[in-house]
Every structure is written in C-alpha cells, then in structure tokens.
Image (cartoon, rainbow over all chains, first blue to last red; front, side, top):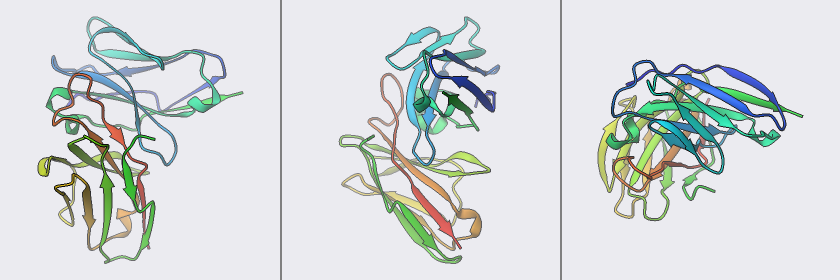
Length: 112
Length: 116
C-alpha cells in the first residue's frame, strides 16, 4: 500500500484558498488518489478522487503532477464550516475500498 | 445525511461484556465496511462484506466478528471488551464490490463505544 504524508495541521482565514499537499512517493500504476473530509464525531465524507492531471467538482479541485508522487487538494474561499480533518488516501479503488488506508489526516482550522 | 444509519449512537458498557453494533447501508448498496477510530490509531479498516459474504479483513481482533444479513444490514459483535476497545465505530457502504469508477463510499454517523 502506498504510504502518504500530509501536514498534521494547517490554519487559514475565511475567504482564502487553502491548498493541502499530500506526498505519495511509492504510488502504484493502478492507484487512485482520494480525499475525504471528517468533522468531529462524524463519519468521513468523500470530497474528490483523481488519477492524473486535474479534477474539479463543486467542492474542491485536485491537482496531480505528471509523476503522481504528490497531489494537492485545493479548497477555494474557505469558510468556518470547512474546519475539519482532511484525509489523503492512495490505493487501487478497483480492488475495493478495503485497500485504502486512512492516515492521521490534516486538521484544517479556519478562523474569522 | 449519507443515508447510512447506525445504532446505537452511544454505548457504555463494562470490561468483559459483549455488545452488538448495527448498520443499515444506503438503499441499493451491497457493500458494507466497518472501521474503528480511536484517538491514537486514527481510522482503521476492520472488515468488508459484500452481499452477505465476507470479502476482506483488516485489523480486526479475534474477539470481534461481523456479519451481513439477507436484507443487507450488518452487525459488528465485540466481545470480552477491554478498555482499549473504546472508540468510534463507523460503518460505510458503497454500491459495488469494488470501488472503481464513480462508486463512492458513504459513512454512517458512527457508534461511540465507551468501555469502563
């Protein structure tokens, strides 16, 4: 399983763009990159998933360079409600979600 | 609301006891996953069921067992409970056996287990 490294915590202010980078140097050919968001005492929520280049949805963007050894989750114009833990997962989703490993995640704190 | 329900929301019990946690997946989802989240270990995958059959095991202790019933709800049984079993237990569901393509894993609200 590909090991991921992401910052333990980040601070931001309302209205700013936040970029959280995840390193996954030993990512395999079949691995996808998936990001989840988790609020305190709630289950994680899927944010975005990608394989290469850029993926965008209504919530976030995911930037993946050509070598795929890292990825960046971009949250545009964050609000207080974006305060949460963000997990970067790397694995072969075509083999099932059981192959995905949640790490400690990045605790994002958004202040007024 | 993810559509995944878990009961009970909170459970307080004593060491040595046995408890059962229940999960109802989203309508139409055949896969059910169980996770344990404690402060020091993060979110750990325990076990995966698909349409009634066990498909994958993670870091699940022998004191723990699970099953998925014909109506697709699942139960996680924890026995001979220890203080270290205190944690949040999440259930997640997805449509397919595998997670590929546009399939997404949906998590329930969790059951907070406290072992005294």
